[in-house]
Image 1 (cartoon, rainbow, N blue to C red):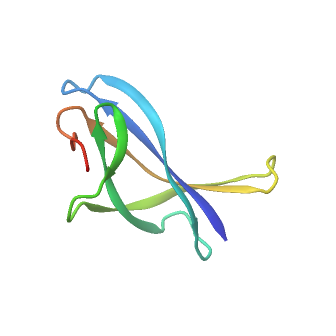
Image 2: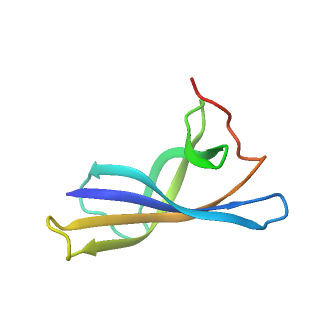
Length: 100
């Protein structure tokens, strides 16, 4: 089955003030049946300026639990979105710079 993986990301400053909230889309993947509570392994997220991106530096992987599975019956073909646990990124602490 084809799933679209999404993750809510809150971007805050050093004082925990919310600067923005975005829905990061990891992409679409084929997978056997998934359930809430299962874990997925992916790259950690980081910031380039205020854009959420993968941190593909060596050893920067993370494991996240699936918190919700949404089936959109209004779209044709049907879209199944998998939401993994949300993350908070701090400007200045989670900046990864430019990746060449």
